[in-house]
Amino acid sequence: MRVCIVDDEPISRSVIRAVLSRSEEYEVECFSDAISALARCRDVMFDLVLVDYRMPDMDGITCITHLRALADYQFIPVIMLTADHDRELRLSAVRSGATDFLNKPFDPDELRVRAQNLLSLRKAQLALMDRALHLDAEVRQATRKLAEREEELIWRLARAIELRDGTTQQHISRVAAVAEIIARTLGQSKAFCRTIYLAAPLHDTGKIGISDAVLNKPAALTDDERLEIQRHIEIGAEILKDGDSDLIRMAYDIALYHHEKWDGSGYGKGLAGTDIPLPARITAVADVFDALFSERPYKEAWSFEKAYAEILRQSGRHFDPRCVLAFTAGLTEIKKYYTDPAVTTHVA
Image (cartoon, rainbow, N blue to C red):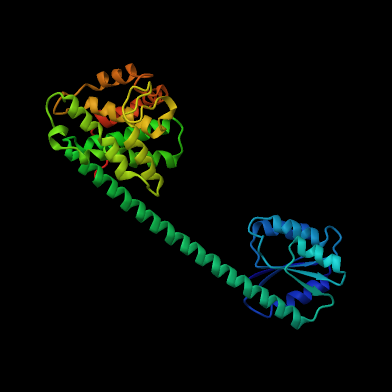
C-alpha cells in the first residue's frame, strides 16, 4: 500500500515515516510542499494521504480540494494533520474531502492505528472495485451470449418464413445488409444500424399465416388473393407486438409499415411521408430492390442496373427521397453483395 505524507516540518515527516515504515506492507513517500505532492499524485496512485494544515505555499484544505479533483482520488482516504482544534476549520476540511483528523503533537500508536484502519478500508474498497469489474465482465459476457442467441433465433425464424414463399436465404441476408448500409449512410447511430440489421429480416414474418398456394402462385394474383397476401403485415404485427426489446419493437414497425408508400398510396394504415417509421422506410427500399433483382415464381430477375433505375424512378413516390439518396451513396458497397462472390452474407 502506498502512503503519501505532505508536511513542511522535517521532524514531523520523519516521525510519521518511521511509524508507518515499521510495516513492510507500506511504501511511504514524503513531500515538504503541497505542489510537489500533487504533481506526484498525478503520476502515482496512493492509497492513503496525510496532509498538514499549516504549510507556507498552500494550506491543507486547499491541497485536499486539489487532490479530490484528480482522477481516481475522489475516494482515497485523507488524514488532516493539525494542531488547531477550531470547529469551523474541521468542518471546512471535511467539506474539502478530509476523511479523518490527527491532532499535533500526535501519539505514534494513534497514528499507526488510524492509518491501519483507513488502509484496511482502502483494501476493502479495492476488493469491491475488483469484484465489481469482475461482475461487469460476467454481465457483458452473459449479455453478449444472449445477443448471439437472439440473433441466431432471428435468422432461423426469418429463414423459415422465407422458405414459405420460395425466396432464398440470400434475400433476407441482402435486405439486412442493404438496410444497415442505408441507415449508416443516413447517419443513424451504431445501435440503430445494428438493430435494423437484425430487424429487417423479419419484415415478412406475417407470411407464415398466408397459404402456400397464394405465396407461390406462378401467375398474377386475383383481387381476393392480393387482399389475402396483404394481410401478412397485420399477421406479422400481431406476432411481434408488445415486444420488450428495441429489436422486436423495430421489427414490429417494419412488419406493419414496410408496404406504406411515401406518397400515401401504399397499404396498411395509409401513412405517408415521415409518418411512416424510418426503419420501415429504409427496409422498403432494401426489400423492393432485392425483390426486383431476384427471380420469383411470377417474374424473372432484373439486372442490378435496371432494379436501381426503378428505385430512382420511385423516389418521392414509393420511397423516401432521403433513403434513396442514402442508397445511392452506398451503392458501391451494396453492389458487392450482388456481384462480388468474396462478399458473404449471413448464414444462420
